[in-house]
Image (cartoon, rainbow, N blue to C red; front, side, top):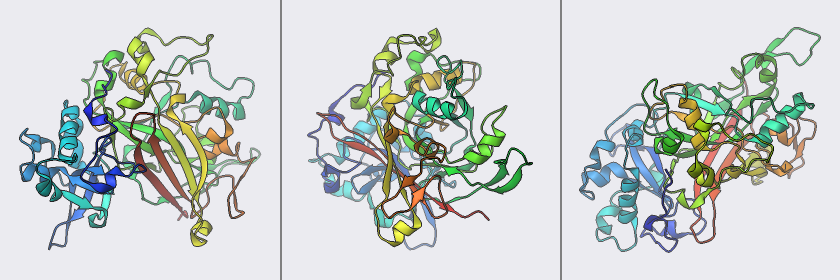
Length: 444
């Protein structure tokens, strides 16, 4: 499936929400990402979750739109009163087949000239009214891939310079099963983990706080409609099962990872925390920013039949700019802005999101609504495009110098990592993903 460009992508479309017309906003009316907000109940001492759409600096309360009758299409079933911790307010919506129709209705309500603007204003929530963001849905499972060939080549070069890529890399979208329970929303502090460290090969391992704490700049996507156990998903239908995208920081303890990952791969070095952005940008919103799949070298093998589709080859890629920043505690005290460490683009992913999803289900694995799948670190061919500190500092041998004279090989306590994502293309409005933030706290 390829989402079509329609009237909701019109660059001249304006909103009666003035902040949405700012050319620098992440959330113009052409975007309309979904999120889950925790807001206080008026005149009560408790909060409740609501499903919302971000528009400029405001949020449209979808449940209230239904309650006051802005819709006649029965959207109320999608915005139930789930009160579970962490944003279950969108869970029903993620499985909804006609998200493009809902997004079109939201666009109509927020468009300049909407005939019920005064009533629609009653549904707006300002940033000052929000207690916090929640996870956008109940995440049952989490899988992380390894789909940037530049990242895989760089990391392989550090440990296997004679053969950086393993023989299966160009045939199989490599991934591992992560831990859903430790996924947290942007703004949540992350505690430095303990683990086994064997940096001295002549001595036994020791159990200490991680020394080489790292981030990984990734793109994530949520499963919408699932599949039955034993029933694979055809590559032609893969994107019908994807609700939308978010930013992912897959925190990594490199010293723990180096000791534990053989023979079964990532474990405790990865599962202590994964941070995601609170906004889910739908596949339809990304329609103007589709690209061909990664162009393979002539000598590379072509994808096996179950991963091969002409439409995926022509439009399976995504043109999303990703940026990773660091702000140390000292920089915050000195009022120094976060420092841009890297800028990469999802066009450089060797495997498309459709291929990731199809491969995941190819053995009959049953994906479920709300499952999170991530791309793995997104890196490009240039040093400035390396999406983690392991690459950017080349395993700590080439430290980064920050604006105030500090240096970083890996993350230190008090450091905050800020990730951003956005799409730009001539003839269309810029849209963004908001921020994915996390600050490192000392180990206990």
